[in-house]
Length: 174
Length: 174
DNA sequence: CCTGTCGTTTGCGGATTCCGTAGCTCTGCT
DNA sequence: AGCAGAGCTACGGAATCCGCAAACGACAGG
Image (cartoon, rainbow over all chains, first blue to last red; front, side, top):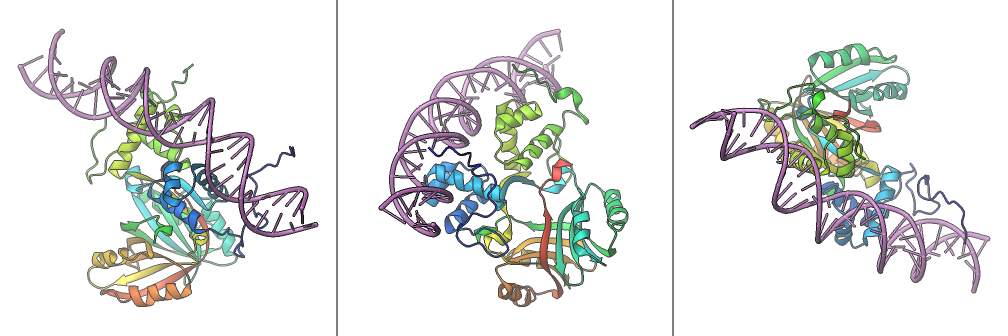
């Protein structure tokens, strides 16, 4: 029987007719996959069988879909922590204005471990960057020495975190 | 053959028996729990036995510590998604200036489902809020109708997301 | 020095879950 | 029709999860 090494599920950037993809290349999600994601947003370790019972699918089908969602990068199952309890006492959001190529600056900032979150924006800042540091000295060094040293960075404005009020991961759950 | 005395208790960088809690009430984490968290940040579904082998603990001990970390709220194991692929096409960071009590405004914003992230800051904004919406109309409604309607909100400035460059959850991993 | 307590770890056995595979259905294409 | 690919179900063996009893170390008091 057709014993070609099909290299099956790993490299599958765009399946031929996997429904329509939106034109930026993001795969389309049906209602069942969305329901699976919701289950895993409540508990990332929930057994496949329990998920299957909740969404009306067999255990193996859930397992295949979850694996595919992970491979495609649609979701990831991870532990998230409160930075304070893990020893990072200083956080800040930094708005950056850029002269020249914004994306290359964004790449440079993304390469820094302290930059937890990097996004290109429209408005009076070209980039917004979230910084997670151990203490004030660390924060000062990152902002004044490292970020401002990146070629193309024209100016920065910092917003030091005083209190984190809300932080959720429930995108599909509304 | 179990001949991997990896990280036994001899190499403790700090005081070994720290059951004390730091003054703000957050439980203190020793090196082993931190290592467990790192394992689960790489893969939230990694088996307890594999984690135990990596951190030098038995499967049951890892299971117990993970359960305790979850119960204490130090970490949670969840699926995180790319909002774009889940149908939320417009995101923005909104800086808010407040007159009067900042915290009550923060509470009001936190109650909105579209506000994914709310933090009190020092700087030219009193609050930074991340908004996740389905489309432009939705975003407009949230910012102009709902946020600005909150008593105490003096002004807002919006930074619409153009491209998300980096988003990690690797706080313990540095 | 001895003893009891408390928190943590270990070592098991049984129930549950994970994982690969084979067979089936449905759809799209030639 | 015939073929090929994707997705689902069923099922069995291996691995994992889970609860529990026992062991260990640190510590306070007698």
